Image (cartoon, rainbow over all chains, first blue to last red):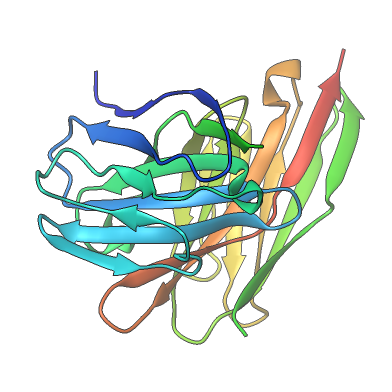
Length: 115
Length: 113
């Protein structure tokens, strides 16, 4: 089944403790992206990647890192999480680096709480 | 500043009602407008609209884009409880080296039996 898989689904952590949220897609998609979703603010892009070893900042990249060493994986790294990073995170992918050619496929989300 | 505004924020209806969800936008270089349905987890794709005045239809859902007035509507006829979800509108903008999706905050639809 074609899908975008994120892990974990839920994560509660403390301020400053490094964490990684994994994202993997099995559709051979070139484009991958991370979003956070907060009440009243909608989905905001954190980072995106147009292909292997090509990543770029989105609208809210501060406090996050990403890497794209393989086409299928696009992990999101929080080196020193803070409470304002408490949010619902989505990974998404599409078949080309121009999302207008094909709509984004989303993972099921990771709900992160930082205390 | 580029923005996408959805209205209403929330809607409560009974099964069988027809609803209209609105999405207006201001972006510099418009490419397309997309509608997604978000239930308890991942947003799932509904429609992509690029041309003005052409209706996209899928079962009881339909959508149309007006590029002159910069808005789109999503219609759901004969609503069912399974239509309860957040409906997201996103506008794709031709940005510097890739396209960018700008999301609205969504309309929460609740359909009661």
